[in-house]
Amino acid sequence: MMIEALIAVALIGALVTFVAPNRIAGKLAFAISLVPAALSLWLFGTFDGSGNALRGGELAFESQAAWLEIGDYSISWFVGLDGISLPLVVLTTILCTLAIVSSWTPIDERQSQFYGLILFIEAMLIGVFSALDFFLWFVFWEAVLIPMYLLIGIWGGPRRKYAAIKFFVYTNVASLVMFGSFVALVFGLGDVTSFALPEVATAMLEGGPDGLFGLSGTTLASVVFIGLFLGFAVKVPIVPFHTWLPDAHVEAPTPASILLAGVLLKMGTYALLRFNFTMFPDQVETYAVPIAAIAVISVIYGAMLALAQTDLKRIVAYSSVSSMGYVILGLVAYTQFGVGGATFQMISHGLISGLMFMAVGVIYNATHTRMVTDMSGLADRMPIAVGVLIAGAFGYMGLPLMSGFAAEYFIFFGSFGSELLSYSALFTSLAMFGIVIVAGYLLFALQRTVFGPYRLETDYEVGRAPVHDVASLLVLLGLVVLLGVAPDLIFDMITDAIDPIVQGGDL
Image 1 (spheres, rainbow, N blue to C red):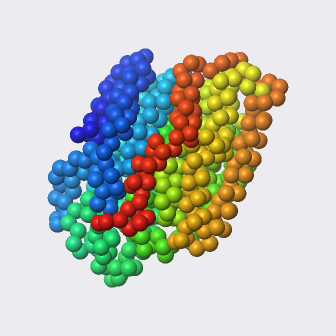
Image 2: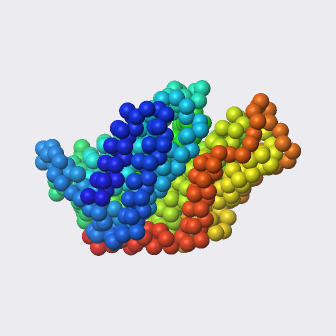
């Protein structure tokens, strides 16, 4: 019942925070968030699962109970963790705690509702990464949209309503496509009697669908694969479904940007791995080249868009599009290091992007501008915060002994040697060129804003960042370095869950 405890603490904490006085809401939410963070670390330390949740693996902290009967199909409360989902649960709890701390300075109205929504998001995200019944998983998946829509629409910037509506419409339409595709698959699988993901995966791998709506089983599987891929691609996001992301990031308050880049984008890549790349090995082989092409385009195009920006938040936002392209490339390589590196990159990018958005938020709180052209020489006034920002930028660029280097090395090593992916060397070489562009736009932005003589176009006095902001930045930086120095802390766990996918596994 440990997963239920994680969800319950965050959910009850959200309700308590909603009704708490504004003056104590931030500290109360922080104290409550420490409980799921501590519990998740305990789960990590005592994890005894093995294999893959959908390939006959031994789940950790598994719990299942009957819920609903719909015709011939049963829906259950079914949760559990394997080596793919557990690191994402830990990432969620840590980033939610630090996002709460980062909001103590900028959020000065309706604090109770703000912090309550963050805790609600935390509960739903834990559900997304642990649920193993499709309907239960979909409830958590959709429930994440509501608080993020409110965080952007109420506490966001001048164009917050436009950004919030765009975010909701894009992701909700994608969810409908994904939902319809999966339900069609279940109806097409004649022997399936529930929406439990392990049962659906087993039926797919043993024979696939019989057919539906006049479509043959093979054609139905391809249609469902494409529908699921498109639905999840919007959430990742990958080109050309990325246009909602910069608007959402720019208008969102800093804590919402931290969670959006750090965890919500990983919902899409996690779902692609769980559904498309686990249940549809034949379709992965069929569509490997176009998927790899989309991945490389996302890497290069996202980096080029970041190079053209002058808003620090937009630079980091577009860099997320580029980073998620690496994840897709690793997944479609379908090798241990490729898929394992893609999963490692989910964690690494969550930490580094959270660090970058938090550092940009600290700078904005001090300067009240995010424009590269409005400031310079901040290193003298904010040495620690700027130092962490520089370190985070080098992590994005793949500096050795930081998690970004380990993730990109695993992905490139795995994709270069892929036997499934045609022209793997070409795709890998093109993706590696993206690192050069990343270095270009990050070094350009840093040179303009943090070095040189001090200059600020706004009428604010810049001083050292508050202690709580610096502490949060240092915690994230420490985790980035820790995973860069010792990637096996999670990579062994990840590869144990990845091996049954890339090697076929025993059903």
